[in-house]
Image 1: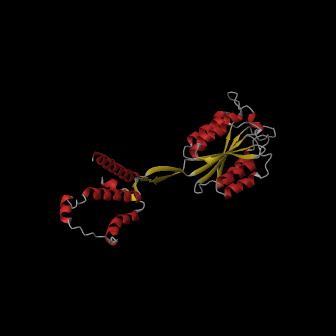
Image 2: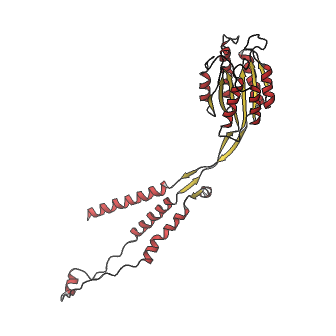
Image 3: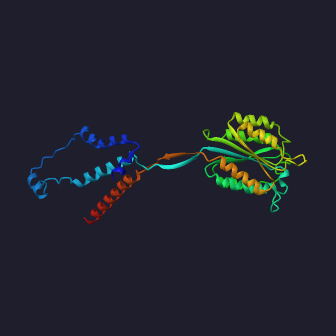
Length: 325
């Protein structure tokens, strides 16, 4: 019980001064004398005896006064807004913002060589697993092909992010690859995040080389480093391919080195890519901050309700008593 009272507080304690207002009204305000007219009645003693005017006036009972003071104290207590301080709850605040930068160019429609999946389908499946494991990170999404677009804001809503990943399709924003532009968009997205004290990380996945960027990829990497964004890169393609869109592992290695990240290379099948995601997950443990927050639960409704209930009860009893007379 003592602990309960120790957590009881009043938001407006100065309202307690109002408790003394009725006493001040009683002693400071003097009643005005009333002028009375007198008529001389010769038979006044007989009249007073017949009308029983010589009896003492009934004194006011203590009940109405007790009711008044009880109601007044309850109303003033409600006005003071009593509050109960709830025990602190432990909250976990994520301390890392991650942006996934995923390639959705036309080459992502090629077969991954496993279960007839395309490369993008393999990326979607393994990225969903990675997201589900990062329970205490805020994650956003940037997609790129001929252009780069922020596709999901940085947030803790993993379900919404998974839904956005399901909507990806090869060639949805062009056939080429703009790696530098995508990295620049990711840096801007991280800078605009409300959580300025969180660590910033990006994971860039592509199966080709830069063919459409307006911003040079290495300049974008230097920009990311200047904004304290660590970039991990994943080469998900065949570096021995002679085609124009073969994966540029050298560029991805340079981007990772400039930003302090790590460059991974996965073969063009899902299992190899899943192992890369697992390695990234293992090497970047979640960063969280534990907060102990308390809330105030308002209690003014209790004295206010009790005052209204007492007033209603008094009015009901008085009405019944008058009807019986």
